[in-house]
Length: 449
Ligand code: PA5
View 1 (cartoon, rainbow, N blue to C red):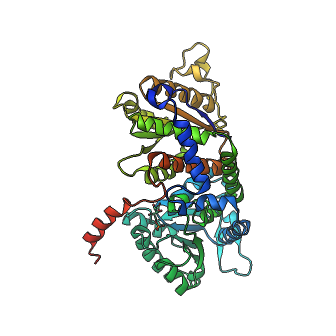
View 2 (cartoon, helix red, strand yellow; view 1 turned 90 degrees about the vertical axis):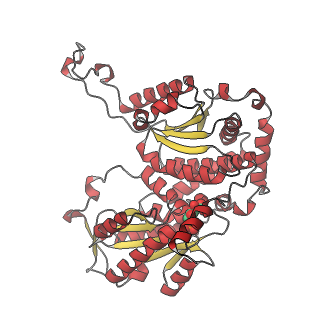
View 3 (cartoon, rainbow, N blue to C red; view 1 turned 120 degrees about the vertical axis):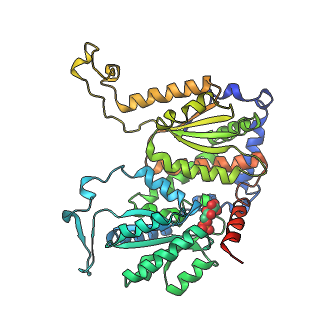
């Protein structure tokens, strides 16, 4: 399902790394499968796929149906791993614009059985808060929510993270002032046993979902952290989840799968002096996946002064801004293109009357009749060639199309690769001790004793 072309990165691997890595990658893979590597108490992201909990998937789907029937907006409050996965999948699988029959209009009012006082309009939007510190954003968000039927999903494993914590204070007060059944409208996703959110949920009788102890934030998208908001957006979470299950089985049982080849090459490039990896995409709806990938790779590998710095580029947009640097700046960048074989860009460039005589004023007669997919393919191949010629090792990951199953598989693929990456670098890929330092300095300034 995933194809990996590495030939444009072959010349950039230092000669002494061209042989011999195979055995090390295989050992890292075996340690991951056996649960004997560093941080093996954090392998819940593999455990949940090995024994799928269909009852949980059903419960989340049913709760999502209730929210879709009753809410105009599900407001998800969370940051980092408690936000990026849901945002990535929803962005990737939702249409760019609402279809005409899902916009808010008098025709699409949905009556609620047994409660005529409460009516809602059209598709439930999933919005986010608590993923940054902008007070302007929150104020404008609350103004936008005025008069709408709102549910809230507060997502925090620790329950004490500052950004979602302060957003939830504000939103909770707002909800309490507007909805008599406020406690029924707030759903908490948090630790099973401890933490501030767990305690508050018990006191208020909020409904809760558990983030298992063995699943770290950045590996939690296929747990209730990601699955509830994703289900509310209308995505089939069963297909998403089982796409990941299938990819796990494929990687675990295939002899030297593409995941191992990709992990090997990333490590070889790291050891050959490259310092950053660009994940270059052409489909804008994959930008969220790029942001999720940045956290997964940055937090997992960036330790002991090691790791490739992960950066996502959206092409061709960024070819008009970062393209110059990628082509001719410092030669420390490695690049991985992530593309879709079938990107849905069938729309064709129209012919103009003057095209036949090559006199059309825009000078674009040469693309008339071609589809956007044809043009994107030329841009992809041209960019890969130019960047490799300019001194950037290029790899190319391609997936057939953008759907639930493929995306679930891709999520697992990237998780498996980064776990191997951590083991190859000799670090624990599942902790993140460095993120505490800025918090200490910030809290000191805010007067926390
Ligand atoms: O990967 C991680 O563990 C972190 O980035 C967390 O996801 C992030 O800090 C949010 O933490 P919490 O869910 O405890 O609010």
